[in-house]
Amino acid sequence: MKKNIAVFGTGCVGLVTAVGLADIGHNVTAVDTDLNRVKDLKKGYLPFYEPGLKKLMKSVLTAGKIRFTADSSRAVAENDVIFVAVGTPSRPDGRADLSQIRNAFDSIIENLDSGKTIVIKSTIPPGTVRSLQEQHSAELDAAGGQIVFCPEFLREGTAVHDFYHPDRLVIGSSSGEAARLVDDIFFPVAGKLDVPVLKCSPVSAEMIKYSSNVMLASRIAVVNELAEMSEAVGADIHEITAGVGLDKRIGGAFLQAGPGFGGSCFGKDVSGIVAAAEYHGVDLSLVREILTSNARQRQRPAVKLENAVGSLRGKRVAVLGLAFKAETDDVRGSAAFDVIEYLINKGAVVRAHDPEAEYNFIRAFMKKGYNCAGGVEEALRKADAVIILTEWELYKRLTPQPLIENMRGRIIIDTRNILNEKLFVNEGFTLFGTGRKEQKPKARSRNRSEFVNAAIVSM
Ligand code: UDX
Image (cartoon, rainbow, N blue to C red; front, top):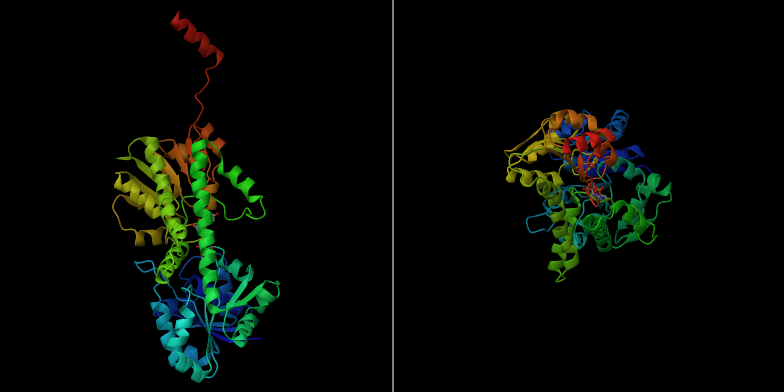
């Protein structure tokens, strides 16, 4: 059944949710306090790169299924269901900063009337819905309003696909009626695909969200440590994860070793649950260790290069990939920060490239000693070594030729294991992957006439 829905927040989660809800048949008003962003969105300009979103946005805008506004009061007054998808970044002490949630709630509660349902999509620490309910109980009771927590599981880069193909729908609500309403809203997606719907208490839903990201982050942290071990004993991490993943209890997905996890969620949510646990007197020592381990992994590509060349002083290094993963222009939490920082602190000169994220990276990292090249070949020019950090298709398709033509050195640190090792080793490159033995070009074996000549000379 078609609903009138307001969505607060037009970041990746908010915008993909708003556009997706409009596309599956609802009347959507997307709200953002940033007037310039609202102006751009009205014209169909996206504030970030997300595959598939531009096309979908154009179709719902043209069909008049979505509108954009900065007028939050009106958006609340004119809609029955209010989604909240604003940011909940980390505070310096690791706790989630809920100020954007509070601001959104202030304008929602002020304009609350007759039975509206508030659906929180933003990731929030356990107990947040309970405390919002207590704080606004008078207004919620008077208006018959409900708060539901319905966590998002969208991955940047595949967020549009994930909206239409969720693994599950989690609805945390203390009201059966409000839970049914949210279930109905997502029926065109979840219902049609027979996606499992889990209805539970808000606090369990809050824990489900944090726990999911803890499980995923720990998986990557563990696989990266195993990769390190694998390098030490001469094993191959791909063979290891293939073997381990065949155990159905473990499964093979999300086991790709790399330069440590990044992004705006894993680090934030692991810190968030550790801080929330401390508040409740619980010591999540193992979970906390995920962050320490990951921080070390993010230095490893630069340390590997340093070990290979002796000293980084004066070395020219091409860094390919600034986004925290492929198919996004998001650099939040990207390993590129740690790697480039390490390199320039040790006196190297860095030329970086990314097909989508250069602008965002330069804005976030204003330091001397590096610049962005605007092209792969430009980044490779006169480089002593190249470090690949992001698994962009463009880099997967790299052949030895542009490296031979542009670089002066022959060292490759392929943190995502995306290059065909043999191809590069045969052309004289030394390749360091993640979780694999270093691959060196074989010393050229001398042919028969060389042996004969050598024998004549030594006589
Ligand atoms: C994550 C969760 O997956 C998503 O459900 C949640 O809603 C938001 O946080 P996202 O941060 O967009 O999504 O990206 P994700 O694909 O999960 O990758 C996170 C990081 O882990 C990236 O740095 C990625 O490169 C890394 N990663 C992922 C690995 O190193 N190996 C893997 O096998 C998978």
